Image (cartoon, rainbow, N blue to C red; front, side):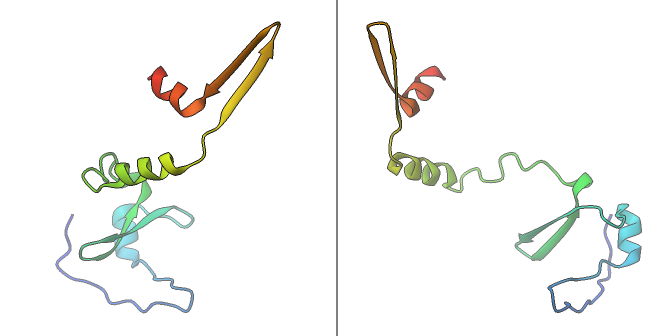
Length: 101
């Protein structure tokens, strides 16, 4: 579906914009339905949630994983100690989880 025209809308005091009825009808958007609002290279993109594509891989190649892993390495380590009959056990949870994978 592609429209060769656009509709200018004013932004209300709370940042609200009305989606024209013609567009809502075409997309099947009803009152109280959820829409996804995101930034695109051309501006703001509003998509019906039930027609939204999978976000899998959206951050691929962005460096996001490396940044998150770097932050994770800076977090304090959590150790768990359990005692039983004559036994003591210490576990570094991040290492235990990594070794389990």
